[in-house]
Length: 212
Image (tube, rainbow, N blue to C red; front, side, top):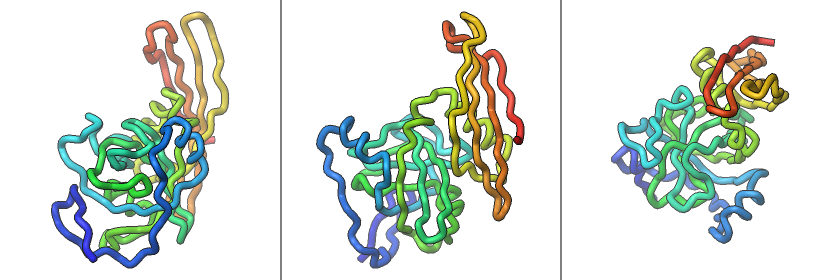
């Protein structure tokens, strides 16, 4: 059996994986709440392209990006955590495109994200667990800091995060703090990011990153 990767423009042999559960498209808002745990599925990989259906470049978040099916529960700009169940490696990716014909439990990772999960590109398809990241998705400034962390630590992979606190410094200044967990081989570090912004204009006043 062969499958076609719409981003690689070539046919590749499909490994004989078992059929994973397919989640029906009922009420997407309700369904997304239900799938905040784990979706078991599979991932292919792509080298990306110049144009995406989301209008977001594949280089977003240091190429830690993904395409989902056109009828997916996940939307453009959503943050997903993808785990390789065979070795436990995880990566946080941003939805930047849609892959025609992909069911809700299949995603198409950028090749850098695919390799980050510890898999050789020659494998073509891998079993994955997909976890929506509603906390970061809902936090606009958390996603802003995530991209800054990826740019500042390009050799590391961000595997987890948490919101630490939100402070109202004044009517025109709000400070939000996030911690990001980064991994490089056997090394783990935590980077704390702070952003101060004007809630009235939605403009950044200052930001900083520091290892803790």
